[in-house]
Image (tube, rainbow, N blue to C red; front, side, top):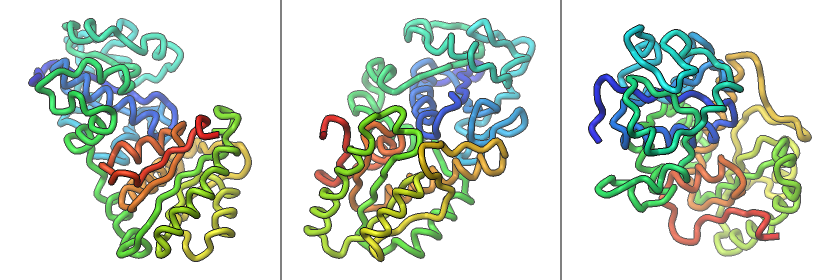
Length: 311
């Protein structure tokens, strides 16, 4: 549906991990298309990646998805739904109140007449069943939806793209590379068998290296412990970015805005560099791993996501 110039969909941060929040963005952009609304992504203080009343954290990483900002919506003549929001509090972040209105039935979302709709949560699996022909992403599944949305709406900030290109040119070009994403830290509180899942990588990597002996390994991990293990095992084969990592089960969060923005940039940098590799091993319970799988049309047999079902 062609967007109406006076109807908007505001997508706020969920306040979780980078690719968890991006799942909401992808689903929300689909809803904006179906509802004929102009999308605006605003990651304010609720974002853990450096947002504030003055700084839209999303736009520290990507270009705006439309020609409008949240401040264009703060007009007294605009009606806003749900009722907890109004033109004066759109940059307010009150998580507990916000999450109570996390989802409208899709029929209601498409029928609302207010100029501004604030959307709390739009995971792709809840949105995709509403896609109909002739929408180009209809029937393509999460992978096709991500690729469609990213190709149409999501563009890296040039400085970040340049940083990624510089790393690739220095360490990755003209090499056959297996990207490997291994979770640790606070993920063990979500998945009790995480350590056992992580042990599944080693034999799979060894099999891959036996078939492709000149392969290098690009490691994505937030864990100093995992990095040390892989450096010990794979030595000069290992490639990794120099980013902030943690030991133990403590997640990496920083109240300093500059450091928080950099943390998001490092997650994004690792993700996009993984997309330039020849194959990928990851964790099916991880939003980062799922993003890597969805954003690229990988050759058959070049991706493996480990899960509790493999134990």
